[in-house]
Image (cartoon, rainbow, N blue to C red; front, side, top):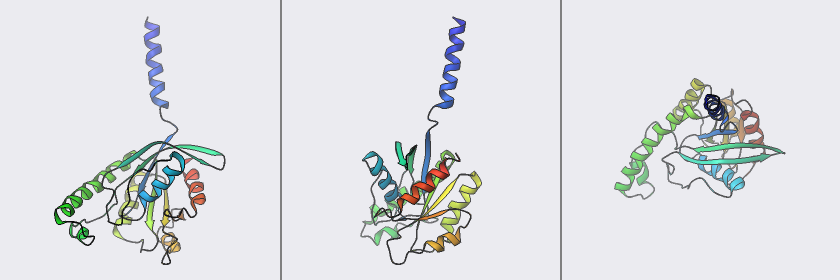
Length: 213
C-alpha cells in the first residue's frame, strides 16, 4: 500500500514536470493596428482551419488576450506545437476621442477606450508567461517610438527570446531596413500578414528561435 502511494506520488510529480513540455507559449505583441491579429489569424487558419480573433481598421479591435491551444506548425519536415497568445495593442495613452474619428458613438468610444486601457495592463502582465514573443510592427511607420521601446524594454528585462516582424511589406511606404536599424540586436523578418508574403522566412526564424526555449 505504501509503495503504491509513493508510486502514485512520483508519477504525478513527473507528469506535472513534463506536462505540455512541447507546447511553446508564443505571444504576439506590438502597437495597435500593426497586424498582430492578422498574423495570428493567418497562422491559425493555415494550420487549424480557424482564426483566433477579429480584425478592424478601428484601433484596439483586440482589447483582451485571446488564445488558440495546440497549434501544430509544420515547416520543412519539422513540427512544433504552440499555444498562440494574441494580445491587445500596447499604447502609452488611449483617448476615447481617437475612436470618434471612425464614426464610433461617444458612449461606445468611452467603453472601448476603458477596455483598451485594461487590455494594455493585461498584455504586460502576460509577458511573465511567454516562452517566445513575436513583436509585430507596421513597416510603413517610424519604429523608434516610446511604445516600441517600452515593449522591447519589458522583454529584455524578462530575457524572453524575441523575433521582430516588419508587417505590411506589400505597401509602398514599407521600410524594413528602418526597423532593422532601430533594433539591430534582434532578427527582423519582413512579411505581409494580409497577403501571406514571406511567411516561409518567418517560420524559419520562428523555429530557430523556439529551439532556444
